[in-house]
Amino acid sequence: MKFQLLLLLLSVEILQLCYSLSVKRNLVEKTEKKNLEDFINRDHIRRKRYLGLSRKFKLNKRYEECIGPGDVKGHCKHIDYCPTSIFQQINTLVYLCVIEDRFVGVCCPDDIVATGVAGSQLIVDLPAGGNDYDERDKYTGCGLSSERSSTETKQASIQEWPWIAALYRHPQLQQGLEQQFCGGALITESHILTASHCTQGLSAKDIRVRLGEYDFDRSNESRSRDFEVAEIIEHEGFVLATYENDIAIVKLKTPTSFNSYMWPICLPPRDRDYVNETVVVAGWGQQYFAGPTSPVLLQVAIPVWPLDRCINSFLQRVTDDNICAAAYEGGKDSCLGDSGGPLMYRLENGRWITVGIVSWGIGCGNKNSPGIYTRVGNYLPWIIKHTMVKKP
Image (cartoon, rainbow, N blue to C red; front, side):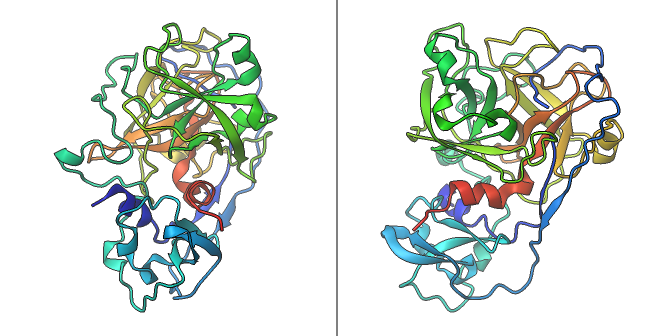
């Protein structure tokens, strides 16, 4: 089944979009002494906001106007009521839409008439096409790299994580200071998923995005390319003081061309629990707390903590809008400079998904103090609305 069709069929009732939480982070494999100075007696009180995504009957009606396949006028409709055959030969990413902030639908051309539930039997639970693939389609779709991933080494391989992005401040780049300040993940040919705290106070002209980077000390070893930014979309509920809703999208001015060095990662399936699963975080951040950053892309495999254990490890409030991950014994964690980068999980079919965004933590690599990540699955309708919806 085509990747594009699966992207279209991602829809179906993404349940309870919750928003919350937040301090900048990066990659560590060295334990440092716990430092609570900035956090003692400061319990970050945050509000959680819910958008109900119930399983009520979906009406066969037209919602907001949009532009459908062939640049014809259409309306957002539930997939059940729009024939899926018209999307099989086109890029369906741009035809997704959000219905009443509750469902993901598709922009259905007005001249198409559907009276039944033609597509219902094709509905899947993998929003970004994380389906099984055969050998001939091995490199079709998101979340696949041309190099087999191995997290046994601290340094990543040159083509292991082709969706990792480096964010620069443009004025520094003009002065020859190639120091990335945050990371991100390529999710479409034009969109980078990152953290809102990375883009605070910056305009589109202030940022450059580098894709295909691996080693900053070696000139263009991995055919890296810098992109200007057209737009920064921060979550409207982000609060800098608390890091609530710490998620943002950076839109590139020029779409990238996919290759073995630049490739999108998948968005996560809905309603999946990653507790005690092994996830991977990668970046160029500090190698230990207050230490030097790394010129080479580093990686570390870490377990996801049970939420209750994570909550009990902090004075600050942690909610189910977050994922907590780090080695229980300390020494393996994200750290300063890794902010905005993806927390990655490998599905059984071999595709990698971004389940979290590096958000905050206390120090780096401390025992009983995991890194806190924004849970991407709770923001799927928001991501789709700002990346995959074609406006009329």
